[in-house]
Every structure is written in C-alpha cells, then in structure tokens.
Length: 249
Image (cartoon, rainbow, N blue to C red; front, side):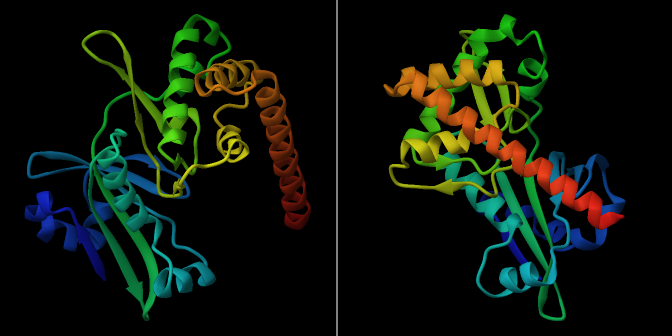
C-alpha cells in the first residue's frame, strides 16, 4: 500500500492508513456507480472519499509500473489547481492498494464542497433565464485555457458555483484526475475540450460565442467547429452502444 498525505493533514494519517479496511463501514454513500463516493466525518472534518473502480489487468500493470493512478492524479491536481488560483476541493490524501504486487484500488480523500453543480442551474430547458451564468461560465473556461488547464471531463456536473459578497459568480472544479496542463494550448485543442460541456446545442452556442468573444476568436468559426466535434462524439457513442448491444446478444 502507498499513502500520500498533504502535510497540513498529517494528523489524519492513522485513519488514512486504515481506509481500505474501513471504507465500507464508515459514513454514508453519496454516489454509487462505476466508482463509489462516501461522505465521512473524521476528527470533526467532513471528508469526501472516492474509491475508484478496480481497473483491468493492463491498467493495473500501468498504474503499478509507470503511470500515476487516478487517485494520485486527483490528489496532485487538486493542489496544483489551487496553487494556480483555480478553486477545487482541497486534496487531503490518496491511497493505492496493491494485490500480488499489482495496483488494485485507489482512494482519493478531499475536503467537502457543498456548492451545487451548474447542471442544476443550466441543465434545464429554460436555461435562458440564466444566460448571465452561462456567459460567466464561458469566461471561466477561457481563463482555464489561458492558464493552460484542460479539464479532463469538462461538463456541467463537474463545475460547482457560488456567489461572492458582491453577487459575482465563483466556480469550483471537481473530478479533475484526467485533466492536462498544457503550455499555450491551440484553439482547436481548447474547443475540443469544451465539446462535452453540454449536449444542449442552444446552451453550447451561447457559451462558445461568449468564449470566442472573451478570447478574441471568430464566433461563427468556433460554433461550427465545436458543433461538428459534438456531432462526431455523439455519433461514435451511438455506434459503441449498438456494438455493445449486439455483443451482449
């Protein structure tokens, strides 16, 4: 087992070192799917713990030899994002569990963030009443890209929002383990990164037009490009589903 802990949370080490054994017995489940997320209170701290699904053999080999696991990347990236001035729940620690010398399970521990996701606000058909928030989102994404940050799963569920004392929106990113940090990413690379923000094309157009205005890009070209990329992505996804159904039969 390998344990990674932020120095500020060293006092949690005994609990973190026993996490693999205690995970299923503590706290409450707030998400259960491919991965499992639990909220656990430890030493008066509200913590969020994510256990990643056990990967396949080739992924286990990669995580054991040369690639950082999702849990460790989530931990490291949380710190890196906050250091760059981008809000993300504090990364408290990560645990890698090995079986027969091969990586098996990863756990990421973070502070709790109770802000709602943008999906709750912009994921409805009547998003037009929140155009100002959609445009603020565009400015935030432009800022990420200018910093060289390409969030690995950029969608409304992974961006939380709040408001400061002046009523201005503030954004927090989660689920960042697949993010990339790139020096001067190209325009198409940035637009590709945005294609899954939403499948609602009306909302996506609003975001892209504002994004292009903030970055001094041609709005029409950006909208055409990203809509084509989204069409291609959805087409591939439908094809995969059809293949999966055929193989299941």
